[in-house]
Image (cartoon, rainbow, N blue to C red; front, side, top):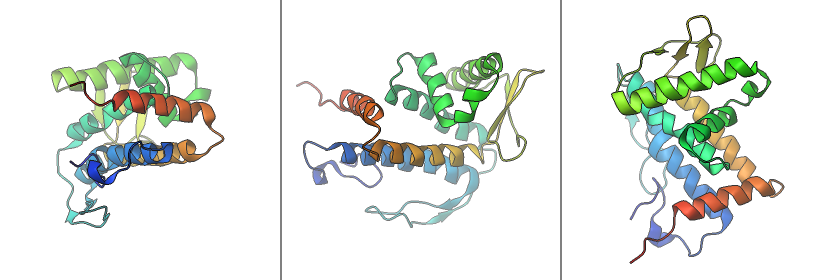
Length: 202
C-alpha cells in the first residue's frame, strides 16, 4: 500500500526512527497536498513513479483558486497539531503563526482579527459551505501570499503564491525536525506522529 507518493508500507522498516517519520510526514504533505495544489494553481512537473520527482508536465487549471485554498487550508491545522496545540481553531491559528513567523511582531489585535477571519471565513466557510464571504482571490502587495485588509476586514489570498509559501514552510520544518538541537519540537512531533499512526485494533 502506498502511504506517501513515494513510500510503500512494505518497503519501510519497523519501527520507524524519527528521521524516517519526518521524511514520511513531509512527503505525504508535499506529494499528496501542497505540490498538487501548486500544480493546480501554477502548472509544472508532476511527481512520477517510484520516488521520481520528474513526471509529466501539467498545465494550471483556470478558475481553480478556491479549490486550491481547500487543498491548502488543512495544512495550517496540521502544523498546529504537530507542533503541540490541540483544538481545531487553536491549532489552525498556531499553524498560521508557524508558517508566517513575521506575524509574531505584528499588532496583536490585528493578528487576532486576521487569524479569526482566516479560520471562520476561509477555513470554515470553504469546508462547510463551499463558499466564503470575507475572503477574496487576488494579488496581495509585494510577494505576500495573504494579506488582511483591516478597514474592510477582508482577507485577500493569492492561490498561485500560497502553495509555494506552504511548501517553503514544510522544507523549513523538515530541517528543524532533523536538527538534533530541537529536542522539544522533535519530541512533540514524534508523539503526534505516533498517535496518528497507531495500528488499528483488531
